Image (cartoon, rainbow, N blue to C red; front, side, top):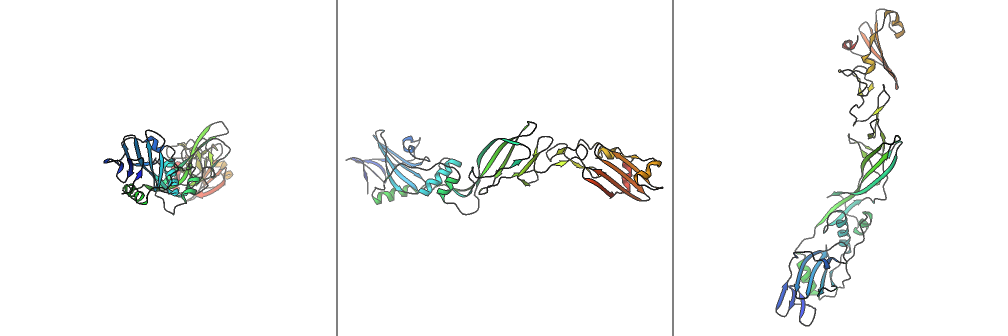
Length: 353
């Protein structure tokens, strides 16, 4: 049985620390072994620990990068290499930075936090920005080179204590066999970005907004409640930020889908009216609610011949005229978008005074 000799009577073999006939077996540590994690980045997994008198030893690893560490009487440890894996050191650094200590991560796609284009809010100033990784576990696709992935995700460089491969070959083999009894956890991830910003509007109101940058992409998008992505946002009258605004043709103010008084279609004229300008329980706008019958002498001014009828209503920025000529009913609406004429059902007469 091969052995690493520590002094004339003490050594280390596949069983643990040996002194004469006494053996301190390898075992799982029951408490942190602080000295064994010193000079490592990330912290290694201490798979086995042994102590006999003034001697201590550990089997430490980050994935397939494994080392034997030995120290005497609390002194500085000496390290001996068992296997080298720079790739697993980088995987361990990524996992420790983005997931949990002791986890290794393969990256399929990643976006560097300095290399993305964010959204823009019209007529506003961004005054604060926070960018953090957004992790997607078990994504499809092939893995990036671990060293490249570590740089892209912004994880620090990995390091381990200097450890020559100086152990007898059969001792190295037996210690590695012990390490492999406990499998290594490697997870596949993709790394995008989550961006939180604060924008100041022209009136001084400050609005927070959050959006994502997909792994491997550089353009960030704000996704609205309908699931539509937007690069440019606009503030509505209630200081919500939205990709698309709806403008009320009566008060000429904007709303979005998040507004309680969001713009909807008038039940009669189908014009765009916000909740404040839909003024009847049956859903009519201010102009349609004001429809009154045109007098006999004024009919010609509204384009109605003898025998026909007309009703007209107005709000500040909208006019609506309903005409009835025999059995033919039409509605004409003027608003900020121009003029539209459309046929309506005779049943609409129930809305007319």
